[in-house]
Every structure is written in C-alpha cells, then in structure tokens.
Image (cartoon, rainbow, N blue to C red; front, top):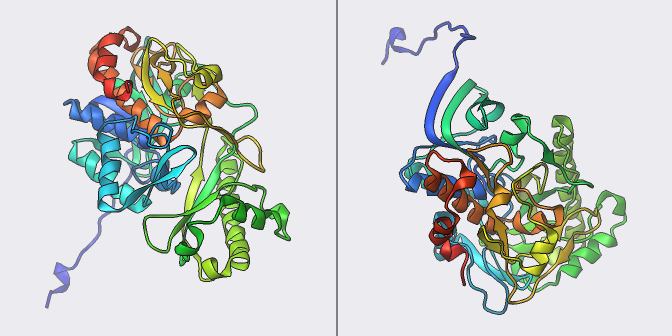
Length: 431
C-alpha cells in the first residue's frame, strides 16, 4: 500500500503576464477545413515546416465540426463523371471509400461522396501529424504583424494563453479572410447575407425505407406541419450515411451573423429546427423515423462571411460561361448553390461538359505579398462563390496555394511563374 507521502500533491503557480509562447515555421496555415488541411498536407510533403492554426477545438474544420457529411465538387458532370481534383486530401477521401467509411452517390448531375464525420476527423488528424504538421487547435488569430506588404507574424489567443507565430509564408484558409481583415485591408461581405445551416446526423432510422424516397416527400411534410412558422426552410435533403441506420439531414436555414452573440443564437436556433424536423418526420414517416434520435448536432455551418479584395475576381459570368483564365489553378462543375432565401436554396446546374476555373489572382489579397487565400474567402462574386466554396474545389485551392508557396521562395506570390505552377497542377486543370 502506498504511504500518504506517495500520493499526488499540488503547488502554487501565478500567471506571468509577460510570457507568450513563441513558434516559428516556414509556413503558417490558418484553418484546417478542406482548403487548409489540403494546403498543410501539400506544403509539409514538400519538406516545409508547417504550423496549422485552427479556431475550433478539433481539426477538420466544418467537415467535422458542422457534420457536413458530403464532399461536393470533387467530380465533373454527366452520366459517368471523372474526378477533377487530385492531391493528398482527395486521395484520403478515396481511401475512405475503399474502407467503407465514405461512399459515392448520384446527385445534381454529378457524384458526391457521403462520409462519416468521426472517421474523417481521425483520418485528417493522422494524416496531418504523420506529415509533420504542428497543429494548434482552439487558437483564434487576434493580431497580425506587418513588415511592409508582408505578414511577419500573428498573435493567437488560446485558453492556455497567448502565442506568437512567425513565418515567411501564410495561407489563409480561415473562411473569414482573417489575415487581410486584421491587417486592415478592405474585404467584401455578401448583401444580402448568405444563410447558414445546422446539419444533424440521425440514428435509429429505417434507411432502407427512405433511400428511394424523392426529396419532395420530406419537403411536403414540412410544408404541411401545423407549426409551419417554426420551420422556415422548405427544401433540403435527407439521405443515408455510410453507417447503417443513420441519415444526414440538411433542412435548416439560419442567419450567419458576424457578432459573437448572434452566431451563438443562430446555432441554437438551428438545433431547435432540427428537433422540430425530427418530430415532423416521426409523425409523417413513422415506419422509418418512429425510433429515430439525434446522434449529433453539427455546429453552425457557415457558407460565406468575408471575402478578400484580390488581384482578380471570379465572376458569376465566368462560372456560367466556363471561362478558363490564363492563371487558372483549380476547376469545378458544381452548381451555383445560392442560399439567400429562407424558404429554399436556388440551384443553377450545368451541363455534362461544363467546367469552370478559379484564377490565381482571386486567391491573392491585393496589398499583401506573402499571403494566399484558399476556400470560401477568395475574391468571388457571391453567386460565383456559391459554386466554388464546396469541398472539392476548396481542396484544389489548398493544393494550389501550397504549390505557390513552394515555387515562390522569397518572391511575392503574384510574381510566381504561372506556367510552371500550372504544369505542377496539370491533373487538376486538364481533362
């Protein structure tokens, strides 16, 4: 038996207000969603030291925290679409399909991949750590240090205190253009605002009974609900996940405020809508949903907040025409998916041979030489962003950002050799 002297004790500590953790790396990536995780993996694979800063307490961004559950925009259009985005993170998705934790399904004239968010979380964590990336979760960027037109460092706040990060290269995949914003540069916001959603994973569902049901069945149940005002959205989808008995539900619409209290309220409202939807489906489809329950409420899913003022703009006309700019670095054929109306999203699907492209200039904030953005904070008109903000093109932009960092060396990113860059990205640009 241990004596009392062997038992754990305690000691007194006092906060040192002068102490700030300091970290250095070749590259700092802000955000670990589809764009940020792809960028971090690709830069680390090139032999660069990488720090990955994530505001949430987990890696994986909204793919994990919001339980998005689907990878869209990874394939082209048509009856037998080809994969149009390649790289380390898309390959991870392909491996999940092989192991059964993700599966392809037809929708919107293309193929989307449904996946288990918990498996995605672990696969992304293992891949990042295995590549040598230094992750920092629960870290919010609060200050940007500038050296002329270059970012030299940032300060982040965590529950364990502040930290200073210094790097020569910066990839902003925050979704909110945090580096240009804190650097004092002008940014764009959508007008009217783009609505967000709270996704949910439901368990105990008779999935064999709903797999063949058209979306209109669920929409009609919502429309006929006696408390209709409690469910503002009439469209959306419910479909089975790779895990037996579980479905993913995306049928809520909530505001996307950019103030702390408003954002919290929006998340709560979204979860309330999920609960009401479950009640409606239990009554309307008792054979399938009579024993259903919420496995997981996703966090507030944000589609658009701040976007940069870049060296180029991806326009809605570019997307519709399938314009290929001279500095194209990523491609996509996902529809324009615009969430401005509470009752329903507006979809504009494209033909079998359609493809549109993201220009490098739209990823480069005007006024900063060593910052490149990737994901939903690039310079794009609102309807154009409504196509390229999904996970497939975000992964492609993350890979492109990593390649720009690798090729630029100490030169400003806008001076990168575009022909060489595109040669290195050819599998993401060419048929």
